Length: 166
Image (cartoon, rainbow, N blue to C red; front, side):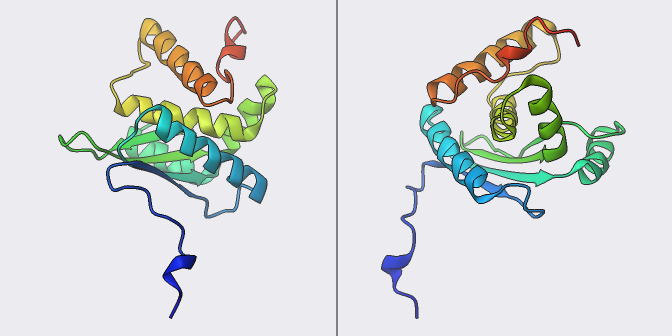
């Protein structure tokens, strides 16, 4: 029998938790560790309650999910599934495309891990009332993303895109 003192301490039941699921081992140990530290700070910064599960997918699997759930062909950066009920706690599944994160990170000269973290924050914000379908709403959402990223010590990730041609 294992010694219970060897188990990692559990977060209080009312605290939030973000679980990274990486079936293709897209993250190396350093990237995983950095994302885990950042998501812990994210939980604290947002006073997050509930659970967020993040599954990392490559283009092919994300394309299937995008078509299935949104009726749109091809991959996307993140798909958000808000399973929360009225109790106020989050219950969220996020599908995050690692190939898209690599492309966008290279396009904007920042780390792959920072792009993944941006997608996680983006998905969580969708579940807390933010939307990005109208231009003004998108601006507010992206400002919130960069504000949160700055608050947790990462700095703006979306901001370098401002003013760049699409």
